[in-house]
Length: 362
Image (cartoon, one colour):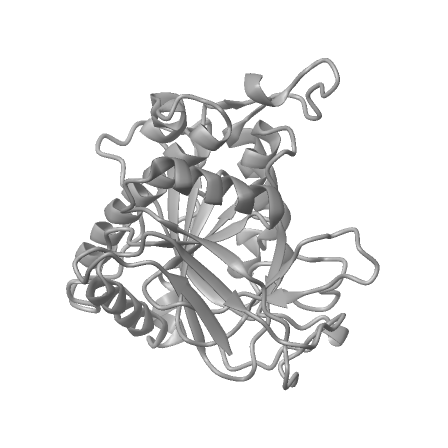
């Protein structure tokens, strides 16, 4: 059963406060696709159209301290356009594998990633990687420069399907990329306030003024996840960057483990909610906040149905130095991590989790 608390002043106004609560009785160590009574997690909803900034910041801060996940509603991207993006994603993944492999990701992390390309949880995914295929799209550089030394590993031209193969596809994806970045910036302003910073802290050129922002289309094929055998749609992991926006279809899959050190780990589902983004914090924000805000372990289980999702990963500029924020440290709580460049951290994480491209040339 789903319980929603919504305060509305009139039909024109959107949600003032929306708290999404789903409650079931069962809690299991490793829920699988066969669980008839899975456990769902209650998440705060942040209304990005609300004029009550203090309320929004309070709800967001509560979520960041607790689960590291929340819903974003009234974000400005219409449901009709979101439906079109999903439809275009399905068009891409419906292509023959031979056509998709011609779009294989490059060293700049742009393009197609086949099933099993990514291995997120090597401790539990002993035999195989993730049962998902994906497609990376970054910000298209207006004036691409020479990067022969590899110092800008996440900048460069995208790989696009030919227009005669997927007419209009590029235009739709570029439009969504632009709109999603504005949603991310709006959320980042609330996060800055929640960390007692100026609201434009993340708007600077070295952070989200010139960010690494990567759209990733995802398709989980009709594989049945079996956690006990190490078979997952996506293995347990935390995201690498600042925040992630996630739109999903109506199929369950995303699970959160609030306490990764718990024995046994408790996994809870996040309900798909049409028209919203599920937002989660990444490792860089956890480092920035000195672990005050959480980058939470999550994974995807699939039940034999095709599942589609759209992830938008938001990272700061590649030259950004991620170091403990002044509002998050004290004599009693010194910085827990050394400073690190964004490009260095991201490159390490991508190398750890993706198949070496030379594998596909054999």
